[in-house]
Length: 244
Image 1 (tube, rainbow, N blue to C red):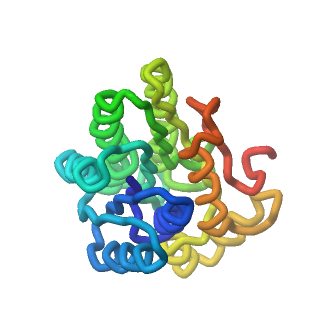
Image 2: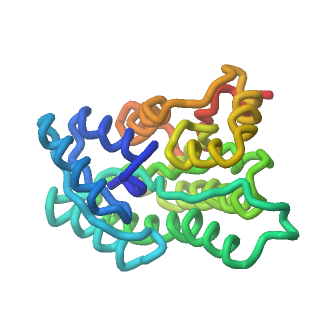
């Protein structure tokens, strides 16, 4: 199950997971994008199902989880990637609406996914692997808006708590601490403020933005048995940003 699958890191991860043999449930709000992606995956011999919905809605998330079980027989892995962020004004100038949206999408969205995915994995008795998208903003202040920094710290906390609670039942939970990546959201931010790219590139040792495919490679590894002894980790995929 991949949330935020209609573009960017989510789309790249869905394509790569499918290429590695996973059956994919694609979840996002943009139905046309999801259906096009599903067709593309199937045209290449993969398996994909679409579940249109918003991670802020527990009912939508539950429907996506049910789609996985009903269509493919089980839910063995999940990439909880849907998110939203903005550079935004200083903390004291932000309004409640921006704060609420930031928390609802980034934190409640992951919370909803964990609450609906974990019971299914427990009932199956075969464990599973869950990957949550956090950010370098989940490690330190990056220049992003204060609510975004707080939200991504919360994702890291939820990840560690879930890993500790369910590790004994074979469920691994990890988070990606993603650096600045060339997604549609990032491109929009750069168009409105070209200094965003300059600032992001300057923070990374590699002096560039990530390609979504590079982040997707880490997702596939964490979802696979190749990372069988990794849980509760906050894995940086940030071009060295967190090292300096």
